[in-house]
Length: 537
Image (cartoon, rainbow, N blue to C red; front, side, top):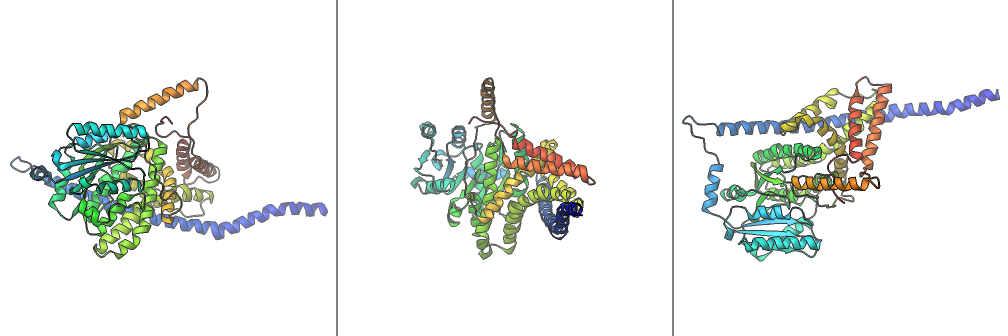
C-alpha cells in the first residue's frame, strides 16, 4: 500500500500542473489572446482605411494632372504652373539664406557645399551658411578650407562653428538665423550635409512662396544616389517612396499640412518666427516646427516633381539608430503637442482630426505597434494554443496583402523584393514599437540623438566596402573575423522558429508555419549581421 501511495503521490504533481495550466489557459490566456486579436484587427483596419483613402486621393490627383497636361487640339501643350515660375523668379529675386548643418561630415561636405553654391540665383541675393558643429578638428579645418575656396570664387558663404552642441541641429540653425547677415533674408532653404540640390531648386520653390503669402513651407522630394547599393537601401527606397509619393502628396493637396522632412525645403522666415522658431524638445525638431506653424495658420506646399539627391544609410547600425529617432521622436512629439492641437483656435476641426488621428495616431503609433504585436507576437501565440483562438483570415492575410500592394505601387522596379520588404519590416517593427513606446512614455533614450553615418555617394560607399573586404581578407589569414550580432533579433528568430516547429508537429492546419519559418529566417539573417554593408570601425 505504501508503494501504491508513493506511486500516486509521484503522479499527482504532473496532473495538478496540467490541470492548473488548463484552468489558466481557458480563463486567462485564451480570452486575453482573443482580445489581442480583435485589437490588432481593429488597428489593421484603421491602417488599411487610411491607406485606401490616400490611394484614392493620389489617383484623383494623377487623373487631374493628366487632364491638365493633355495636348490641346492645336498641338500646343496646355500651360501649367511651372511654366510661370521661372518668369516670376527672374522678375524678383528676394534674399535667400541657405543653411547646411553638419557634424563630422568628412565624406560629404564637399558635395553639399558645392551643390548649394552652384544653385542659380543672383549672388548678391544669396547667402550660403555652413553650420559646422564638428568636434573633429581635422574635419572642421577641411570644411572651413572648402568654404574659403568658394568664397574666393565670389560666392557669399559664411562658415559658422559653435563651441558646444546645445540643441543639436535645431540649436545650430536657431543660432544661424541670429547672425547679422541673416536678418535681411526673407526665405531660408535647408539642406542636410548629404543633400545635393539641382541648380534650379530656388527658381522652382521660392516663387511658390512669393505668390501666396499664406504659404510658409515648400518641400521637395528626395532621390537616392545609392539606392542600388544593397538590399537594405532598396528596401528603404520602397518605404520612403510611399512616404513622399502618397503621404506628403495627400497632406499637401487635402490638408495643406505635412511633416517637414528637415531638409530639401524652403521656409518663409516670417512663418518660422511666428511658429516660435527652432526648438529641441524632441528629436524631430523639423516635425515639431511644422506642427506649430500649421497651428498658427500657415499652409504648406509639396512639389513632388522636384527631387534633391541624397544618400541612404547602408549599414544596419546606422539605419537602426535613424529608425529609433524617426519612431521615438514623433510619438514623443504627439505627447507634447496634443494639448496645443486641442486648444488651437486657428485651424478647423477637420484639420485637428487629421493631425491627431491620421498623422500622429495611425501613422506614427498604430502602424508600428500593429506590425510587431500582430505578426511577431499574436500570430505565434495563436499557433501555440492550437486553434483555440479565432484568427480571421482577412486580418492575417487579405488586409496586409492589400496594404503591401498599395506600398509597392510607388516603387514598381522593386516589386520582386516584396517578400523581403515584408519580412524585414516585421523585424524592424520590434525596434520601432519599442521606440514609439519610449517616446510616448518619455522614458530613457527618448532624446537620444545619433547622427546617421554617410559615405558620400554610391561610388564612395563601394570603395569603402571594397577596402573593408580587402582588409578582412588580409586579417583572415592570421585570425578569424566576426560580424556584429544583434541579440534581440536572434531571440526573435529562436521564438519564431520554435513556434513554427510546434505548428508543424502538433497543428499545422492553417499552415502558419510557412510564414513563421520565413520570418524566423529573416530575424536570424538580421541578427547575425548579414544585412547592409560593412564599414571600417
